[in-house]
Image (cartoon, rainbow, N blue to C red; front, side):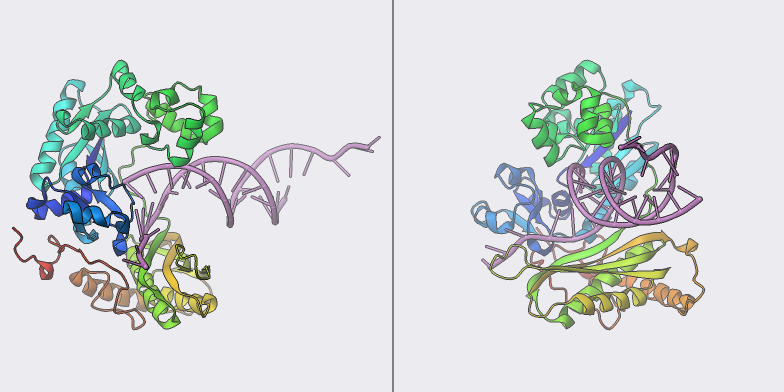
Length: 421
DNA sequence: TCTGGGGTCCTAGGACCC
DNA sequence: TCTGGGGTCCTAGGACCC
């Protein structure tokens, strides 16, 4: 049996831990740049605010219902996420961290009759030790565990845990479960299946395997099998290193000068490099892209990008940034207004297995020593957007709105709150 | 006026190898 | 008229996830 522990309205719950007076009130957390709603309390959902809805579309609701609005505060959320995950590790044999607010639990070997109580215990202890409400779904496969955890949210009477394993119970649930809510079936497939009269998860599992295979390939067949109770998606305890690392942002204002754009891209490059070093990798490729505001119909649109190849895989901020600078000089077009840009690193290999190069002229030892010194100093400051030590081309100012940011309560003592009552 | 960011996996087709 | 067989690697695009 597998479990899925899913934090309820996670970002909102994080804010509520430190502002208990927000309990019972409508709360929304916004995406970067204060653009869209990315987390909503149940009260905010009830007011009709949808996932990903732009703030300007529901400003009036905010006023009318005194909705509490927050900019996203990832330092707080990722620290709270670590707390939840480590709490879970203390309660079950193995945990697969799936996302910032979800973890799969390996429950093989635990007697069936103990599972419901275990689920409730997990939910209770997470709440007690971290302040975060957690829904625990338990079922024979990961996909069904996901279904079960959704039921917890739908039915408060389940008290945070739902065990689902008897065939007749599963059928009863799947018959009422919209196909689009199934893990692995997204918008495109919903459209296709609905057009064919397949609306519920039960309709889907009742299809012959060949049809699913032809329409959706092997990934669809896995989902189909999982819904039928056959485990087909591996449980992966340790996280594999990322194969691609990206930092990108929309700017709060449009940028026209190459110098200003360079400052932002240099910051993105530096943050990418930190992520790369944190996972002890090096990269063979860097890509940049710059683009205009895609929502503006009244000006010229462009999406420009370049790639650089490093013959010897690198994790040096200096080397990556100089590649970024060259690419920007190459693709920048005068006269456009840029709204979004990003840096992507790929061709990622483990740092201790970097292939050397006969004609390499760089003193890699020296770069490595410098980078680890820089990382050590910046780790103390904790804020990736204003590091203590940075290369000169990095912008000092982030061109980003975050007008409703809460303090980084748990990680930064410079940021400690005034008193909230 | 205002519209997020960061990832993964699979497949088909082309280039290339012997 | 008839034109082999068996592979690998890479890339772009499409789907998905949170």
